[in-house]
Image (cartoon, rainbow, N blue to C red; front, side, top):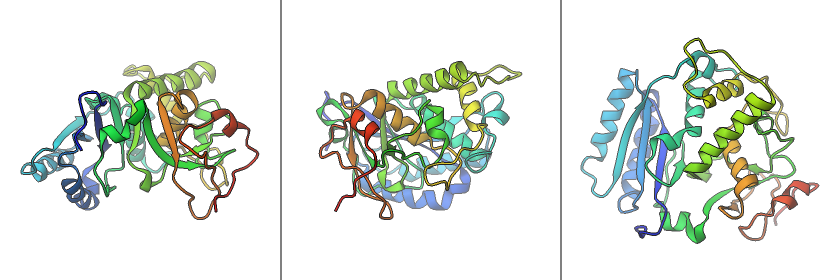
Amino acid sequence: RRADARSPTVALVTRTHAGARPALRNALNCFITVLPGSDVQLVYVLDDESPADRALGAEILQQFAEVADVDVRVKYEPPPPCADQLFAGKLEGGKGKDRSQRFNFVADRFADADVVGHFDAEACFVAPVDPAYVTRGGRVHNFGVFRPPDADHWGVDAWALGKDALPFDAMWADHFPIFTRREDLAATRSRLIEELLTRKNLRRECERGWADPFDEAFAALANAPPRPGAGGNKHGYSQFNIILNYVLLERAPDAYAFHPFGSYRGETWYDTGDDRVDVAALATLPAATRRA
């Protein structure tokens, strides 16, 4: 269904690279099936300095060239100053993973839409994305798993936001797309700048000068000491968990609705009963409740 003039616009934005071509090819075939007529932008962002990525961008546009009624865009991102500090490869895979993680915090800079839908480029959707449904009732709707009192499996996420724990776990492939208002991505960046640079004073020098304050804050995040996550099995960070826990704690329920999606491998979860999350109640729950 096409969004009416009153519905916020939605862009699906992802970062990919030439090395992901085999998995990406399957996902592109999926989008050709579900996107026509859905009235969303589909934006792929690749490395500006990579000839292989430039070739992949041309392939993506060619694949959609004969598909009617799909707004597909390919954009290229140059490496920022002091990329060696930003993309340290210490917490979450290699340097390319850090570059991908940072991108999601700034995805609004590549999307001409009110709402940004984040997703992994190799993920495949099974139904069209309807802007009127995603933003129904004046709120942006997301799915995920509530695991109070602590859903920070990565360990660094709560620390980066200045929290002892986080209630929401967003990072599973079957929860894509993850939706945020563009202004809330900017607000998340401001929160990380405040927490990491002002409160924690984790400032870093960049000989060429940082492109903007968020890059300095992200360098502090990417170079943070490992911290054990809930369950003790990870020592990294998830950009999606940071973003969605920020908007959950700061912007729900007025601007966002969070719907419990289910449990993962039998773990407990908290079912709010509806989509109006009581943040205060989540913060004080002694443990998650198991849904039958």
